[in-house]
Image (cartoon, rainbow, N blue to C red; front, side):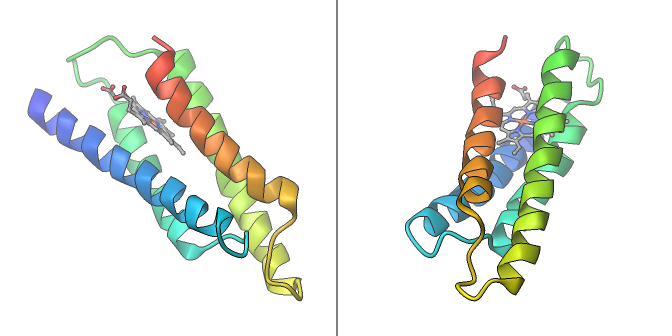
Length: 117
Ligand code: HEM
């Protein structure tokens, strides 16, 4: 059970890497949103929700998990709004505030995961 949970943590980290990696690529590129971000978010969300189930291995910190879930939903909304705006924009980019918030909130969720005990 412990090993299986660790594999799900690994998948969760892959989701984070895909989302944040895609965002970093955009930060050095045209600063838009990309489909890869959505895939990363989806992977992190599914694995994160699986980790939030009572596995019986560790006590779960529900306020922390709830906070991460709220932030994930906000990131999803920002990517959604961003891609709609991007489609309409001539430069095919998103408003700067939306772009930087996506990266900041992704990093915030990773920080919460690591620092909130
Ligand atoms: C963009 C969204 C997210 C990011 C960037 C993220 C990032 C991370 C990272 C880096 C870890 C590893 C921390 C460590 O091992 O010390 C982690 C662990 C975890 N995450 Fe997330 N996460 C996200 C969303 C979520 C969501 C939505 C949930 C649940 C609803 C969730 C639940 C968990 C749980 C329960 C762990 C603990 C695994 C463990 O240490 O055993 N995460 N997350």
